[in-house]
Amino acid sequence: MKIDRIHVHRALLPVVGGAYRMSHTTVEALDSTLVEIVTDDGRSGWGETCPLGPVYQPHHALGARAAIEQIAPGLVGTAIDSPRALARRMDGLLAGHGYAKAALDTAVLDLLGQQLGVPVSTLLGGALVDNVPSYWSVTVGDPDASAASAAARVAQGYRRVQLKVGGRDLDHDVENVRAVWAAVRGRARLAVDANRAMTGAHALQFDRLCADVPFTFEQPCDTVEEMEALRGRLVHPVFLDETTLDPGVVLRAIADGVADGFSFKVTRLGGPTQAAIVRDLCALRSVPHTIDDAWGGDVIAATCAHVASTVDPRLLEGTWIASDWIDGHLDPEHPVEVRDGHIAVPQGPGLGVRPDRTRLEEVATYG
Ligand code: 0XW
Ligand code: MG
Image (cartoon, rainbow, N blue to C red; front, side):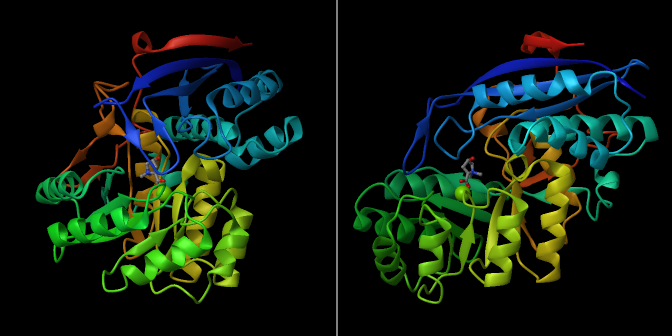
């Protein structure tokens, strides 16, 4: 099986409700990039990468497409033998840019799965479950609205709620945490995510002001160094998200004891093949983590579900997908969505999803 050509498609994904609000950025529509690798034996393999705007982390949609433009011509005509061979080839064409390479890694896994007649989860080591838990993310808002949103989703079956904080006075966020905890206590676990917005001093104060509320404290500060300075000084367990820019950072964070857990984004790690490496590193030290992506349609959602199904359920904090924030599905025939707080893992072969081309805009072809 050889790569005959690579199509790059774009999908504009407006946010249902108008806006998704976090501490430092609000997004209203996301620009998703889908790659379709077509083989000489007529198969199509799909991958997707969808940065959450240009400032959530050092990724952006135009950057993803520029990186793919740099890599794709060098892949056309080559054999699809393994994800590792692909990674080597891609690294020989462009350093870094794992979030763009992630889409190509996914597409190759989709193709290999189709060729072998197995789901992508099997290629990643094997699914342990066929249904993975999701979690509900409550955006920055007021106590009544935040508590109502959390309670409604817990009633639907979510067992974990993530509350966004930061970017405003501490008292307001403390009030929000208390309101949400009162609404879900005993029925769901709580994570509180500042998305890098707090100074170390604010994080310490916030942590003390909410010392009696059990939650995991996600990415309070901007840098690994600031997070290191908080080590041993916070009451709440700390999860790293945006700062885990590659598997090497995860290895260091585990070894140094900086993180009690992680909020992983599959594309940020470089794709499912790399995500499987950090999954195994976490398993060695019993470190809990999510398997998410920042945003994206059914291809990303399916990718996350496949990876998550291979994680020890004891360590899997949940899989967040954007389906509730997107109107409709890129694959209306095999929509990946949350039901009763859980996501059914597509059965494959390959990813088990196939976007409807009429919902996409083709932006480039290589080969
Ligand atoms: C809740 N998420 C997974 C959705 C958005 O990508 C932000 C994110 C996070 O945890 O930062
Ligand atoms: Mg986060």
